[in-house]
View: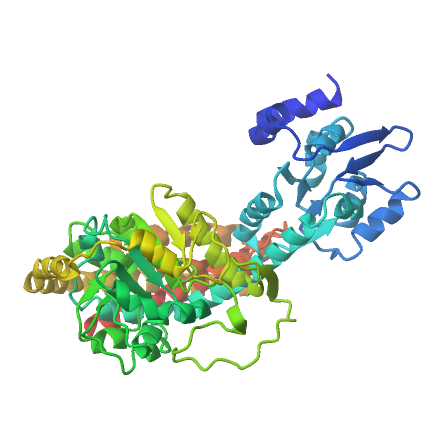
Amino acid sequence: MNIYEKNLEFFRQNIHSIYECLMLEKSRYDSKINIINDSLNLCVENEGKKCFVHSTYNTESENCSMFSSIDKDVEKIVIFGFGVGKCINYICDKFENLRNITIIEPDLNIFKVMLNYVDVSELSNKIGTITFIINKTKEEATKILWNCLKENLTQKVELTYNISYRSLYPEYFVHINNRITSNIKNFVINMATNDFFLFNWAENIIKNNKHCAPFLGNLSGEFKDIPVILVSAGPSLNYNIQYLKQVKNKAVIIALGSAIKILDSNGIIPHFRLAFDGSDNERNIFKNIDTEASVLIFSDMLNYNILNEYKGNKLRMVLNTDYISQYIQSKIHDDNYIFECGFSVANVALDVVIKLGFSKVIFIGQDLCYTDGNIHAKGTWIQENEYVDFNGIEYIKTINVIGETVYTDNKFLGMRDMLEHKIKSNSGITFVNATEKGLNIEGTVNKTFLQAMKDAVTNEFNIDHVLNKVFGEENEDNNIEKLEVVNSTLINELKDSIKINDYRLKKLKKLNKYYEKGLGIGKLNIELKYIKTIESELENSSFYKKAVKPMIFNKIKTIFMNYAYNGKDEKILLEKNIRALLGQTIVVKEYLSFILNLLQE
């Protein structure tokens, strides 16, 4: 059995996706490869560019240059362009803590050649875990790599590249590097946001759940033959906002987030207003508007003052990230639609209209870029900066739907990715992008708003008939009684959970004292093992297991990531485990007590 056959068998037994790639796929590149046997090198020609994959003079110097910026304590290295593996011995000698490498090889032709010279099983024994990303587009490679990285961002990870690959496969590494860097930044921001809003959301949810409102899902199927217009607050809204009054009885109009204020400033009353932001700033959107004129679609995560002050009809949507409302409302109602949260209110709204059964969806004001240098249309409550310096690294130059050069950023692109994914999954619905000067949204048909109205908005309908039917069916008194019973049950469950968690905290503090006094590691580990089992006692409470624990999951994950340890020192490992479990127990104590106080008000 030669090396290639041995590697093929290795993949067949251990990484079947790579085995299938080798057996069934063709390279994405029509590259020509000349093997230089004397020095084991490859001369590769691709898309008019030709170069050696490795140095023809000094491989040691090549490796020094390739890994010069890598921290000596690195635990994971991502290598773009492995060639024939001339860096193996170098990285094994230089990076003692290395536990994992990820090899990104865009060209299957090169990868197949490499397998004739590198024994993958031996490589795995030397390095540890190896992840192969082979023959993927730069977008696919980025997604796979991010899924590998995000589960343990406390590991010391470094990205590097073979310089020849930068010439042979231009923009591939730049795309991966930029997107992964952006993803890490956004991940950290999201974790910090979740941490910041954790108690704010709980307060909003508990207080908003005291309001009885019909479920948004009650409207499912009522509008299947009627187009819906999702109105976002992007600058392009300035060009078509005046036409909305003409279609009030021919399409369902839903104002999203900041667009609520913009439409009101222009004297336009939509059929629905949709909001779920829990911050105090969200209240500014609703200041000085007629709250009786339009139905509010809300999530219980919405700032509770808005719901208290809103005088008109309200429809409750339960989001998949709101585990507390999911739990409470499931005890009150038999049926409960769960809607997907997302990057923005537009992502939530798209999931809403799809699940309600609309067959034609029209986007306006969904620019996803800084049209005319602005982020919002006129009439919002936000004071816009007069000048945006687009030279900053966070801004990305691109082309809008009419061929103009515009700037966007990773947040906008993340919103678009989610919109496109949802659109792709619902091919039976017609999606029209009538934003006019925004970015292209794959899966939509680009039209001016006037053309979209001419093509889709034809028949009139009576929305009041639909709404009267929905709001007339709700039995408020019965729901209030059910909510009181649920609250009483939850208060008792929370008190029991707090006692169990306090017992865990007491045991951990005692264990920590023994550790500091130098008691034997074996005995301490036995005690820690027992303390860990207390979590199962907490999970006997269905509210803790189904609502509380998922809400604080990201907070707990961050704590354990901060105390992650991949070394072999048992004493350090024990200390890290004690600290992490202490952190978790304190967070649980604070969160349970906070919710209990809210329910007892």
